[in-house]
Image (cartoon, rainbow, N blue to C red):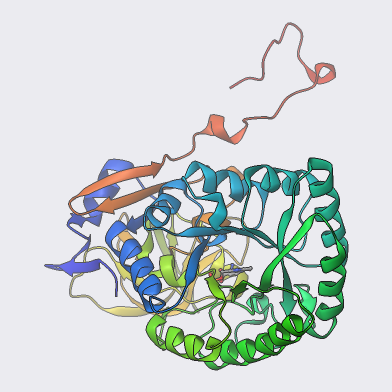
Length: 427
Ligand code: LLP
């Protein structure tokens, strides 16, 4: 459920007409509903009410500090994968004791930053990383909380690009080998073993892969406890899917019931790292039709948002519903919706039956709140677009549209290339 609704054939976000925002901020832009965001977080959190748990929102899905603030205000933690995400999470006001840090390639400066800030735990993805974390902690005279991110070799039954829990994926430590690594970690004086973590993939639309994973993790937890190794936290990662088209993913409460049942008797605090399920359907991309054209085989709608703004269709062939911002009675035709980027994979929809769009008309690309802006780039030197948050009957720009000057920030023409008497880069 979300708060993008038609009122008299016009798309509204909560109590604000989308067209009104477009007129004020220009196009394209990302638009989020505060009500949807906080309801989604609340529903997920409530689903685990019966057990000790922390919901660490996965910053990679949407890392705008205003969005992160929505969740930290509701008591949420943050799942990070870089120093940059830690910086954002802290700016958003997260309690560092609710930050978990995953990722296969943590650098020493990032590890030190996280130690300085006192995060809850590192989800360690290799033996060498464990050594580095221990070394950094020893140099800093403090202990590092760790969980080993185990790879349970479970098929998440999702798109191969976003499956992470199979042996063939680069993520985590083979669950079979992890006991050895735990034994090693247990001998390291500057490491505090906090628990076990994993993440099997994204856009998972069934409960069973999570439960298979839980059952494998349970065996590991029992084996660890038999050896006197403490396990206080069990981090099941993120991955719960959403409806983009016709998928029917489990409701968070269904997911929660099954997970709680599987985790019974473990006496662990459960950690979750949801991203998409919280923000995916709480955001849309609003774009404007620039041109339409046809050849013998195809019809094209050229819009002002491109793959640099939303890469999911071009990258994963992902489906996003396309809707007119103002509905009307009109003929439908089969079209490709394409952007201005010089790449054939620059499309938002392929061979889609859509109403005839006119030039300058506004178009809404739905379910774009997760992995939309956070994967945007400046390719083709296109300034990053604005992000807007609606709450009730007001809208707030939470990231201004970039300018051309933003594009060259940090770039420098070296002295040997300067024109005579040129002092600064022309801007
Ligand atoms: N935790 C870890 C360690 C992760 O790697 C991820 C996502 C999450 C949590 C959050 O997963 P979620 O609840 O959002 O499924 N760019 C792709 C998705 C990549 C997901 C990467 N990891 C897409 O646009 O579909």
